[in-house]
Length: 213
Figure: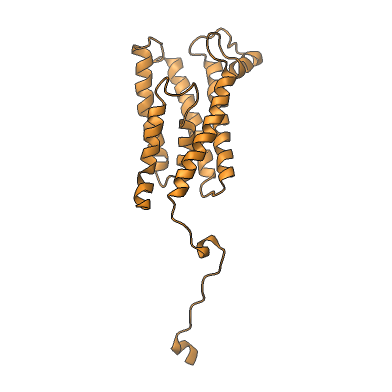
């Protein structure tokens, strides 16, 4: 039963994240995506470690961009918007790579720290890309050091300040990494004392003919 649940767990993670990406479902930048991509690298076996999160992100981004373009009236399907989206995927790739570095780690604090670090890196990459590319023509995002600091801290007028997004990014990255990690560990078969290295394996008994020889 536990093994069967563990096999479907990646798909349950993906379903949860897909639902959480819909606008308004969660606070801005409070997302399970960061934790999913990190934990996929850390826990998922084989090629599913990148196929599951990449497939989810591609499909959901197609749906979201269509929604913003044709329902909300935002111009997102343009060269600057696509380049910014590409930078997002570079951030996701970094998250996945960090997860692979934590593969096999059983220290919960270490995994939590890795998830928070991944969320921090993703925030820096994507907000720097938003400042440099400026796909929405924000007047505050001048290509200067001051403009970059504004992009990372205050953001553009009429919207919540980006430090609030940063807070939500860190909190959600840590929270969902802890939840995903705990769920994965709870479904992992218990190790024997020998596998844990707590005791030595029993010595093989000598066969009678070996003793007589």
